Amino acid sequence: MNHQLEINLRNWVKADFPSVRNILEITWKDTYNFIPENDLLLHLENYYSESKLNELFDNPAVIGILAEFSSKPIGWMKLFDDQLTSRFYISSLYVLPSYQGFGMGKRLLQKAEEIAAKLGYTKVWLGVMNDNVKALEWYKKNGFNFTEQEPFKMGQTEVLHLIGYKIIAHK
Image 1 (cartoon, rainbow, N blue to C red):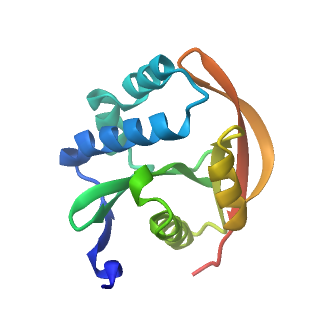
Image 2: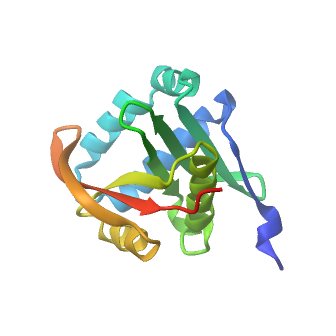
């Protein structure tokens, strides 16, 4: 069976907010086991409450992409067109753990590159927690070069965040 036909990437709508929060909470608990759960939930509430999601949704520099498999939301990506720094960021890219390893992350990454290229960018930027070894290795395997680092705080927990870029084909 060809699962490609059942995969859909689309711009998010406000009705997707509960699915986005669910995807974030499940993937964070699975991925960030080095951060106390209270800090994860605090960060979720501080940055992804309904009012914060509304702010993101209404921000013209933010693009939200929902990934669906057979109409079920399984991933979410937040893109940010940072015109102040002339950088195009993948701010968030999350796929539910049970759907990882099947190419969904790569599909989302390709979609981000396509959008960035259409906007005239030649690089895509992102940040990854240093302790998120699985994601860090995946991004390196997919062409990202990490050149900067800065602290990142989730609740009361501070971790090292690596910032990297990938050169993309200009379309």
